[in-house]
Length: 366
Image (cartoon, rainbow, N blue to C red; front, top):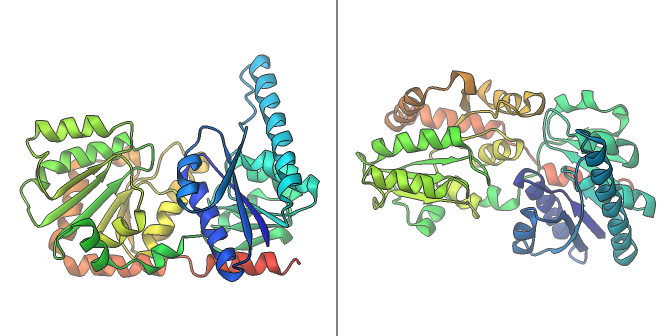
């Protein structure tokens, strides 16, 4: 199969595309895969590390704030379509799969014009603008959440499959991961992260929690700050005189997420679709704080699906109390039976055979 995958701007779009590509290469080892991303976005760093060829095109959303900006943004979109058409002629794809982000628009439009079979995967319960716009140009739309169906007109194109998670998460082993990361095998491991950009609200919790960690040598705290916030957090740790504690790991970016999730006992995070899927696949209890400004409040519904099954504690931003969160952390530190119950409930929410279902859906259209 000659396959193009595309999706960009955030790990939540990029990693599902990589997971789908991985599955297709697993099933058809002679496949040729090309990833198309957007200039200046994190796919430039992530995709080559995953072992796939990468080409970049221009992409943006229509900016309607002024006529001048609208003309400029539409010109950029048109350039992206022309660039994508050139790639189609050179690569000659059989199949193109988009996983969200504005880069999907020029790529799928060009692929449809070229004659490739086109597919989309929508990760969230609230469908993205690019995916809604591209509906008429694709054969199937794979859904991460059933609730997203209401945003698409042709229900015959929709298939609920859950969210694609890379094979490494299913295979991750906690004991092996702890040894690899230098984490004591019997420590209680708390992993807080706010995505590649970080989250000030979650970082505030982490900074406050540093004081507690400093009093418990059997707690390991992995603190993913986001690149913009890392130095500030390190300065705060230094001011609390715990920057040298061996049980605190402050990282600007988590580039081996399967190991860190596998090594953890408790995860504290936002509730983007990919984070939720990866956390549940690893069977980890969590405290989820949905991003309040997410479109359609979709992060709330992502987390609610796990919370309703008992796998996480969902705390909305306007109800967030740092001391209460730390009390919850310490409750699970002391009550390992409750921790085990939540972990089991989280695993029950994990997506099953998502990439296999996507592969079968694509093959059925040949």
